[in-house]
Structures are given as C-alpha cells and as structure tokens.
Length: 308
Image 1 (cartoon, rainbow, N blue to C red):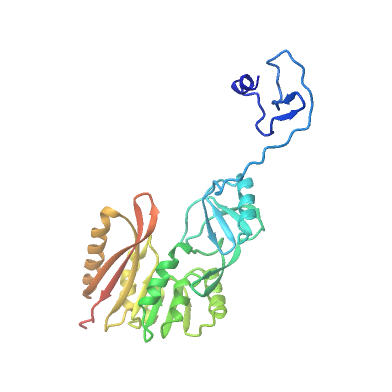
Image 2: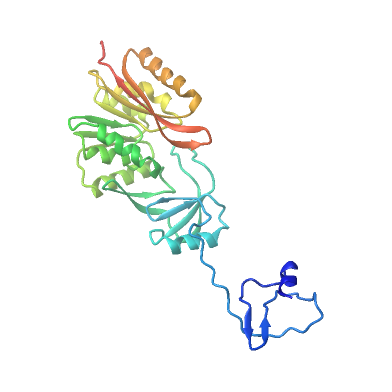
C-alpha cells in the first residue's frame, strides 16, 4: 500500500509514518480518492528537515546592508538571510546597474530595517555612507590596501574621484597630504564626516568636476588615483596637469576584456607621450571580474620627469 501510494505521489512527506499496535498510519495528501477506503484522522509527527547550509541568494554586503541580485519578491529568502547573519539588518535589491555622473544604483526595500545608510569598516578605517546617494564598492578593498602600501610617507596624493573617501582616508594615514576631488555633493558630505570619524587632518576636499579642479592643483601630486573605470581616459590629461613635473605615478582604472589588455596599455602609453611626458614603467593588473569576459584593470604608470 505504501509503495503504491508513493508511486501515485499521494504520500505527504512532511509527516512521518506512524505505527500503533497492529496498525500503520500513512499520512496522505489532500484530495486522496484513489482507493475505496476510509481515512482516519490521527496525530503524526512532522519530519524535521535540516536547513540547507547555504541560502540560494547571491548578495553583496556593505556594512549591515545586504544587496541582493534577485527581484524584490524574494522576501522569504531575505528574511532568512537576516536570521542567519546577525551582521545583516537590512536587505535591499538593486533594480539596475550604475547610472548617471554620480554612478548611483536604484534600490527597493526587501526586508529588515527601512534605511539605506550604514557604517562600513575596512583595514582599520570606518566609513559612513548612504548607498542610495553615493557610489561605493567593497570589492576594491584589497586594491585600496595595495595602493596604500605602495605610497610613501613624503608623498602628496590627488584622488580625482574620491567618493566617500575609501582611497583618500586609507592613504591619508600613510602619506603627507591627500587632495580629494568629488563632484557628488552627498559624497562630499560623507567624505568630510569620514575624515572626522577617522581622525585624519591632512586631507583637502574640493567639490566639483575633476577637469575644472585640476588646474587648481597644478603639478602638486606624486601619486594620482583615477578610479573611474568607465570614463577615466577622458581625464588623463587632467591627471598629467596635477602630476609633479619631477615625475610620479598614476593609477589608472579601466574595464576591458582580456584580449584588449595589450591595446589598453599601448593606448595609455601613447596618450601620455602625446601630452609631452614619457613613461618609465607601466604595469597592468587585473583587479576583479566585472562581467562575463570583462575585467576591472589598473595600470600603474610611472611617469618620467618633465623635460619642460
């Protein structure tokens, strides 16, 4: 009987089969009418199933906010994520990619607390931010740490697209001075808060477009950060304006498929030479995967002393 019921898909697997005296009680599903027999109600024990070790949900965590890549109707999984990970208080879903000159994403609330503000920590630094108003990527943490380790104590660094200050503040703890350019007024507000939060006093913040701000810091930088992968090339001449005439290093970020890495390297070399500067060294490094067969890359470019 049990075998036949199983073949017909009529056994209710949510409950255990029970035995009492000479009787066997087999839980069946609603709509049981395959046999000419009477049903008897009885107490049965639910099957205890172990929860899967992983949640079927892809997500990225910034502070105590998890950003999922599923539509907002996955509320049950979002609640389970909050239950399992005590460091997550909010679950949001991104409804699209980065857009606009501020590089923002649109989010919808899924579960947890109704907010988009959080506190993110990285390599001993703390960052306040509102992910709905500013651009931020925790996936560059290792890269930011690498750049900070390359910098020297005597350097002046220009961060051309500073955002809330992840490169700026990490570098400020290592170098003499950091000059931060940022066009997004909300990011500037958080950048100033984060400077105070991390107790660094060697950062100069300028609000505005890097093209208009570059002439105000002419030939002052020993190192220039160009973390604007989608549009950095259009600001390369401005990076050379702020770069020291005695030479320095530009960290230029881009997004390319692997078969264009060599072309990207030569393009930067030629562009710098066209602006009257020579390249002493140029190293390309894959930072992380961005999309199928496309990568965020960084070119560490050591520019020679100007002949002017």
